[in-house]
Each structure stands twice: as structure tokens, then as C-alpha cells.
Amino acid sequence: MDSKRNIIIIIFILISFFIFNNWQKLNNYINNNKNVKNKNNFKQINLSKNKDIIVKTDKFLLFINTNGGNISKAQLINYSEKLNSKKSFTLLNNNLDYTYQINSSIFQINHKKIKNYFNHPIFFTDKNFFQLKENKNILKVPLFFLKNNILYIKIFIFKRNNFSIDIEHQFFNKSNKPIEIGIFGEIKQSVNIPQKYLDTKNNSLSIKSFRGIAYSTEKYKYKKHTFNDILINKNISMTANQGWIAILQQYFLSAWILPKNKNNIIYTKKIDDNTVSVNFKSSTDIILPKHKKILSSTLWIGPKIQEQMAKVAPFLDFTVDYGMLWFLSKPLFKLLNLLYNLIGNWGIAIIIITLILRIMMYPLSRIQYIAIAKMRILQPKIKEIKKQYSYDKNRLNQEIIKLYKKEKLNPLGGCLPFIIQMPIFLALYYMLINSVELRHAPFIFWIKDLSAQDPYYVLPIIMSITMYFIQKTSKNTYDDPVQKNIMNIMPIFFSLFFLWFPAGLVLYYIISNILTIIQQKIIYSKYK
Image 1 (cartoon, rainbow, N blue to C red):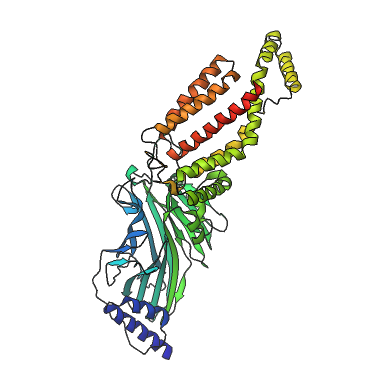
Image 2 (cartoon, rainbow, N blue to C red):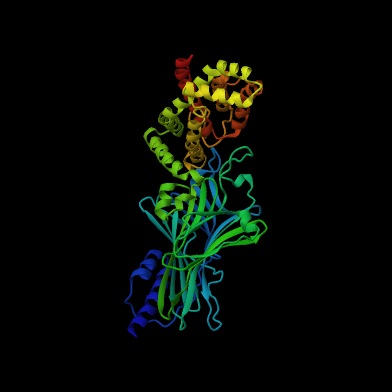
């Protein structure tokens, strides 16, 4: 009996402290104190209800709406909206032309027609601005809801230098009836996104990163679905004891980490013709009369920083989507990141990693160039064979094969090394276009953003010149006039294609082409 009275007294004291604007003591009492004396009832607290609470940390500027207690707007203060802009990038928003929202709430299992008190609760708090102080590493933002002798405190916990947010749902059941509750989480977004809300400039010629829904469970480390899958009612529904759900775009994501030790239901939903959501519901807990319960979940809002995401939840770093070549792209990024930490310039790091890759691939490149050089030397003999056996194609092929065997030349020798190298270069390509670290990263002079196109198209022009020299070095390989014309046009075609490519990628191709020219000159000079 004493323990029941003690719980009543604890709650009374907590609320009293809250009234006198002392949140810190209130939080300490809720979590730690257990031995206080009796008081009969809660009193309905009538404090001013703010529409929005503003929260500022070293990573976020957030607006939390007290009607439901959810984040209505999230700005990432370390990431600018545009290059050289002082305006922070807005990830979460709720505008007429675009919606991107994350919601969490408590759902109640009703027994004997008990009303669900947690349906769109209107919270109150003692102030409308919270800021992480310079000498603190943690900021707690509490929201309070009190109804029918049930106190619900929703606490947002922010940590310094971290994009994850812990959310605690604290319940004190002063009523005479048990309540059964669980956690609900939702991420919803408009399918059609205006250009101004994208994290990078989009164009029709560049390869686009994945944008859509992803999740991780015990069964699937990483699984993704497009928004169109949801719009045509290819909805997901499954259970999971661990994992996460997320919505992805090129450089940023939002994700709910599923509550641990719970039987969670993951499902998707079409809200309207232009809005979809991915959701979870945890299994429920029963809170007996005069008892308390704390339910927790974790939210990630921010850039795709692999090292940090891997610490928050297993496989969350897989959201940096490198596709089928992820096993190559991941170590390449680690190497690129290491070079940047040593040098301090992403452009120079790209140049060095290109040099490293080309040196590693030189044995294969050498085989390729030697095969091409030998093919050029044999061209006069092949022409003679073609003239001699032009009437008999079978004999023509036999004689050419004999010539290859005599000269110990494999006609596929020039192609095979190229095929082997392609996965590595493609892995590097996808690594560069998906790395948030290159967003708004300067190189030299006019290149202020390696993730955007060259504003003056200097790099694409240089790249086309390097391609021209490569084709000039190899021009004797092609006897067919049509082939020659096609190969002469290729540098122009590629330069047009690369006009809209990110400067970091064009830089990579320029350095790779320069090394190709040098290697070709050295090897071809031995086979004149």
C-alpha cells in the first residue's frame, strides 16, 4: 500500500516542479525518485500551449508542433540549401506543393470501450525554445500531456555531433484501470518533388540516384522499393524484431530504428495520388494502475554519413546505395576518405585515387595495349589474306587464325583487360555520385562544387581533348571508314554527354585519360 501512495506523491511533486519552471528537477524525479508520500489526485495543469517549439543543436534547427508532438520542419544547419547560400538545407517540411514528414505517436488497444486518450494529443511545455549549450553534450526536450489521471511525457533527446534523435515515451498510470499501448512511427513524402526541394541539381542526362522507400529486417539486410510500387498498391507488410525503415534521396535520408525486443509490424501505405508512407507499429505493453512505463525509439534525420549510420543501426549505412558493386565501392570510399583526411581537398583525393587505381590496373592495361599494338602491326598481313581469300570466307578465317597463332596473339587480349577493369571504374563512378561529402566540396579556382557540373564547361572540354588524343593514338587500328568516322565523333559525343556530369566525375575521367595516353605512348613506342 505504501508503494502505491509513494507513486502518487512522486507524480504530484513532479508536476509541482514543472509548474515552477524547473524541468531539470522534474526529469530527475521521474527517472530516479521512488520514495515519496501520498497525494490523492492529479490536477489538470493549465499552461500555455505553443503551436511550435523551436529546438537548436549543433546539427539541427527543428520545429516541433505541440499538436501531436511531431517535428514539422527540420533544417540541417551544417548543410546549405545551395552553393554559397547562407540558408540551411531543409529536409523535412510540410508545404502546399511538397510534404516530407516524420510522425511518432502512441496507439492504445481499447478494452471494454475505453477511450484512446493518445489520439492526436495536444502537448504543453514550459518554454518554446530549447538550445544545446556549448558545455553540454545532451539536450532533452520534454512535452507533457495529462488527461484522466494519465501523464504522458514525450521526450526528444539530442546528442552533440549526432544526427540520431532518441525519443522516450514515459507513462504514469494514476487511473484505476490498466492501459495497453504501443509505439507507432511514420515517414511520409510526396512522390513528385519540386526541383527546389532536391538535395542536388537534377538533369535528364545524368544517372540518378535512388529515391524511394527502404527497410532492413532479420530477413533482409537492405531492401528498397520505388514510390511507384506503393502507388500501384504493391504494398509491403511484414513483422520484424529489429531493423529500420527509411525514405532515401541522393545525399540525405530519414529513418526510424525499430524498437528493440518488440514484435514490430512494417507496412507501407498510399495516402493519396501523390503521397506515400512507410510505417511501423510495435507490439503493445500493459501498464497497470499506479505503475509507470518507458517506451523508446530512435530517429535519424540527416546526411548519409556511413560511419555514423553504421553505429546507429546495423546496415543503415547500406542506404548509401552503390548498387550491385557495393563491395567495391565501399572500400574505394574508405580510401578516398582517408586521402581527404590527409590532404584536405576532395579534388586532389580523387586525382590520387585515380592514380592508385591506374597503377594497380597497369598489368592488365599493358596486356590490352600490347594486343592492340600487335594488331596494328599485323594489319598489312591481314589485308593481304583478305585480298587472297576474299572468295572463301571459311578459308579467310582459318588463315587469320593461323596468323594469330603464329604471332602468339589473342584477338580478345585487347578486350578482356578492359572488361575486367570496368567494374572497378563503375564502382568508383557510383561512389562519387552518392557521397554527401562531395556535396558543395570545392576543388580549385572556378570549381566550387565537385558534386555539380562545371559552370564554365572547362573540364568537359579538357576531357574531350584527352579522348581525341586517345583516338588519334589508336586510329590505325581501324581500317573501316565507318568505324573511323564513328571513333572520330566519339570525343565530341562524350564531351556533350559530360557537360552535365558532376565535376568530380569529369575530373576522374580526365586523369584516367591522361594516364591512358602516357601508357599508350610508352607501350606503342616499343612496337613501331
